[in-house]
Image: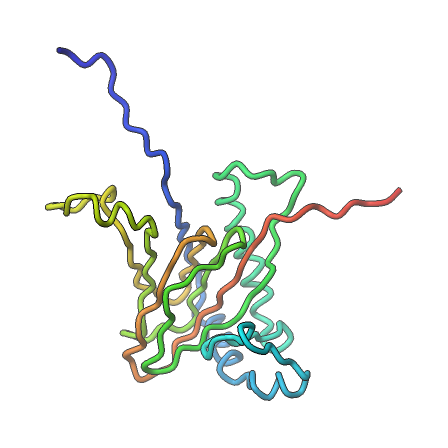
Length: 213
């Protein structure tokens, strides 16, 4: 029996977009300084901010306002521009709607700290930009959460992207990763003796404001 046609359909791919910020050393040094010198606990007391219960942020999360780290404005604008490439690949409506950063925060991982497995649902796209990444300060691993395949598929004997159930990126300063918000990920333990800083954010596709006549 002869094959007349042959096709391979990759029906459910999970995209992760990777970008590099050009000539970012001086930018990152200033942003790192602004992040680590910002006193988040004092700022919460000053502004009388209380999250309470399940709304309490993780220890490594610092919700730093843009006036305390001016480089954030440049970074978040750059991130939205990059996210637009992903949104276009998804076929989203970029004429009637616009991409908007709806949350952002600094990740300050001190020695021995790590981020447990989590996702950012129900947002649309999420991302992380790496500011200062000492050697051994923690990789980021993305995880395919379809648990059934993990117990039914045979173990591969050679490298194949089709068999990946997780994928690990080794961050470097200036790297920006953007991914679907529902995708689980985990950040490894900071085994260096230095502070590791990054900026995370969520981006949603929101309606364009209507203009009155």
